[in-house]
Image (tube, rainbow, N blue to C red; front, side, top):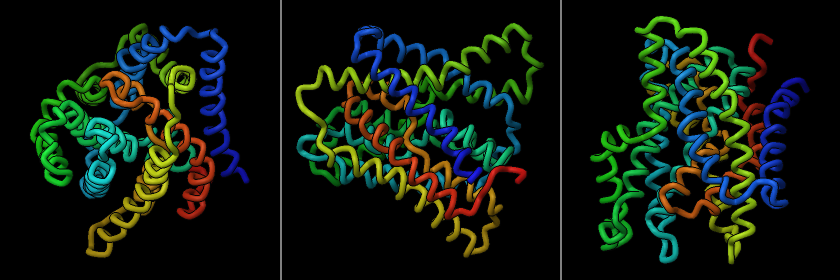
Length: 335
């Protein structure tokens, strides 16, 4: 019972804050023109501060778990390719298919994963979250943004060849994409500062803490606001078939792929700490990261569809996360 209460204590505020943003926008308390300002604040200030602090507090040597990172990377690459391949249709272009791939594999590790995994795994949970963030920032976001910025005509000579060329160009341009990724540098800077730099001056540390503490509530509020804005301005509803399958991929297929790949590695003699694999599986079972909606909006993709995927997955995660915790047989750290 205490395990279920711990999960509920994390998930309930997420829904409450999203609802606050939705109601505030629908009732006109939050002007529609203020929503892009919230996005800029989250992506340029609050989220970088949070990522810097997480990176600074984790020694680099403890992050470099090669087998665990390889498992997560393999599963991300497989699902990205599959979602783009099957998601690009006559009415859904490469850009929207690529963001469907992002939302299908990029977990809400920062806003939902940290409080949940710290309760269940302690320090192991923090290490696994940082590791997955590095893979997501270097591989998932960077490669998918490279695909997003491709002209449609370069992938238009056939579904298979177009997608394969898009993925190839994405990997070729991954370094360029990473260098321009606003979420990568705070993590890298935090790791470097934690390893080489002195302690931050108290006023600077306090400022970063204040900014980082606003990342989760403001982002959740913004998701509700974006959902409300889309409902108010959209001329047609997003078909269930356009968002529910991706939500299920994130909640069910992604963790199943990670768990099965991890056990396959162990079957051929690769050493894994069972607790770390369980933590990695639970990270994969998290709903999508809420900042993907802001990225979709910035790059001109269908942010309404992305927001619906996130909302559906977050709602369903009440049940899927509870089932995942039960199936993995984990409980609060130290219990």
